[in-house]
Length: 208
Image 1 (tube, rainbow, N blue to C red):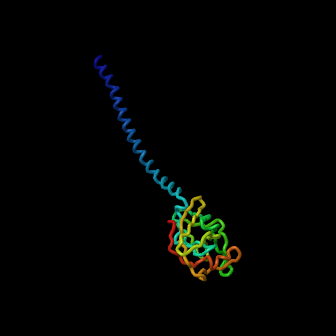
Image 2 (cartoon, rainbow, N blue to C red):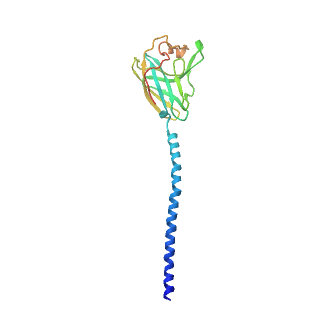
Image 3 (cartoon, rainbow, N blue to C red):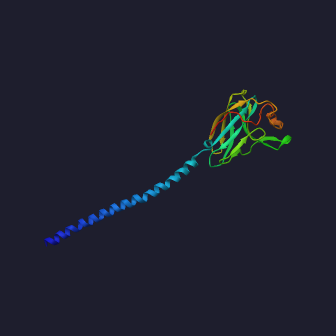
């Protein structure tokens, strides 16, 4: 009777030991299976960060400049998009101008005319859009102050995602007759000698 009692008492201890071993093994397996899941979350985080980039963070105005003068002028340069998605510049403004418009030039030679760019300027991913006399430009009208060579010209660019980029460009003096611009009469009659310059870029560099 004594011997049987001892063996019966030992069985629970054996079961407890086996249960503890199984529990430890289960915890080890759980730890191993969790590692790949943590690693798989890294690319998703990177994609989220890319998607969160605004147009104003991806786009910059390189070599921006404006023609010195009064009443009306235009801003030129190169809009560079360093992001992985197309961006659209939809409007612009300046505290020194009553109105600012995005303009394009259509036609060639004496038939060339300047008009507001419908839909704005689309800057392709990894690409650029040139703003130059005789082509696309940002037009300042009804200016409240004269621009002298070397003046800093304030400008705010607004994009289709609602973000804004505020910057300054330098005014520079360009002799009349170097514009290579065809006048269109009417509203844009001032686009000629008094407001636009040559196609060379100045020293200002804004944005990215």
